[in-house]
Amino acid sequence: MVSIEINSQTLTAHLSGDIDHHTAAAMRTEIDRAVKSAPIDKLILDFSNVSFMDSSGIGLVMGRYKLINELGGKLIVADPPAYIAKVMKLSGIGRLCEIINTVRR
Amino acid sequence: MNGCINEMKLSFIASSENEAFARAAASSFISLLDPLVSELAELKTAVSEAVTNCVVHAYRDMPGGIVYMQIKLFGDRRVYIKIRDKGCGIEDIGQAMQPLFTTAPEEERAGLGFAVMESFTDKLRVKSSPGNGTVLVMEKVLQERSPNECKANLSDKSGRKLRTCTPVR
Ligand SMILES: Nc1ncnc2c1ncn2[C@@H]1O[C@H](COP(=O)(O)OP(=O)(O)OP(=O)(O)O)[C@@H](O)[C@H]1O
Ligand SMILES: [Mg+2]
Image (cartoon, rainbow over all chains, first blue to last red; front, side, top):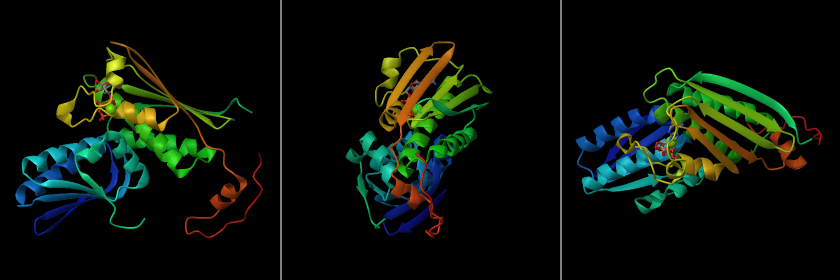
């Protein structure tokens, strides 16, 4: 599931539940619709409530990077749970976007 | 002590809904060995990668194809997972296993499935025959759990301690 929050130029997409091949397509559509309809320069993908993610999630992040990059903005990945952070590290996605921890978990 | 102590087999239609089903089934069976939360998360991810590949690639042009999953648990805490499809097969396994290689970039596939399976298990073997399908075997040895950890596991979700017992080893 995705819930969208817009605060001036920053759009935060709060993701929750499992991110896999089955769920990623709908998440992608929702995020992209929101990104294209608001004048933003920063997209934050909030992973704090994601219960599962496989490489389909990496595809999702890489695709959003492409989109926001074309629009001249930047992408931030926030609060991935420990083992999801491991999948992200493996993918080298940290070279495309900042991965931050905002909450102590 | 090191022989197979439990085994399950499951076959299901290669649909995207069944990716979550396959993870849940594998995770519930592997839980019988009392894995660490991190070990279980890694094995669930590896299973998800393998099953998703059957759905996305193997049976791309064959709707209704069947995925076969077998899991064996061994006395030395080894988990053996075999996932098989009768789909299109892989022409060049070496190339397919390269990180970032994908035949479906337009679908936002990252080409990292094999890299994830390799890093989250101890052993990964792939056999494929173009036109006939693919067999994937993954193995992982779970960490030994100390008696203290076993006791800790006997608390319920709210953290309340349940009756403790001496683990049989
Ligand atoms: N079971 C299979 N049957 C046929 N081809 C497969 C199978 N599994 C993998 N492949 C081939 O190997 C390639 C690499 O697989 P891998 O899982 O590493 O990446 P991907 O599935 O393309 O992307 P990602 O897993 O990151 O979403 C695939 O693009 C596909 O061409
Ligand atoms: Mg894959």
